[in-house]
Image 1 (cartoon, helix red, strand yellow):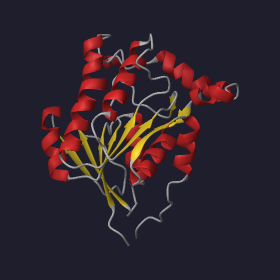
Image 2 (image 1 turned 120 degrees about the vertical axis):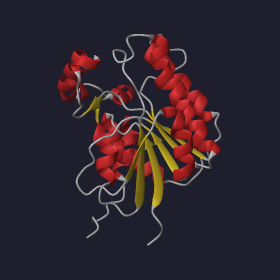
Image 3 (image 1 turned 90 degrees about the vertical axis):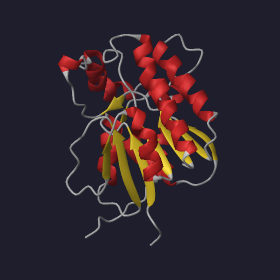
Length: 237
């Protein structure tokens, strides 16, 4: 058996991040290391490392871990940022770019980043405009392979904390209506379909295993294809 692929993950406490942690549990073809600002409960049987440190120390952690691939699942919300553009941008752009540059500086060859469908520099929506800027800046870092994953509305369980301003009523309603809305989205509108966070997680892991160089963007259908291509490995005894 070949050596497992060493994958570092930032943003492990988010919906997709937690799904990635779950998806790697029991696998022998990859070794996951999560890097974050706070601890998280790991799934039963998880064989991984979790480094808890402030973002200014993540550079040192990445250097010590020496991953082959880094998956970025970082992201905040408008409410969590206090509805402040600078605070939102500090996470969704600045911190992502700090992580990407540190990864490249320490020899990480491949970078998988979760963005959003509709991300564009010319967007009138601030969220989408920041996502578009991040995509452009990541393409300039110089990774041998860069995968941008652009899901629509994410479906799955999310840990809500009303005291932290994380009770997203509109998002909850949107997820509830998503199965019906998906039936109405065809042709060019398919890319806006809601998608399960577990599918996005599987797609990210498939992409992390791919070695061919280049820059790639993946919307709804491409995410589905990548997820279904993830090798199914029997759990270790």
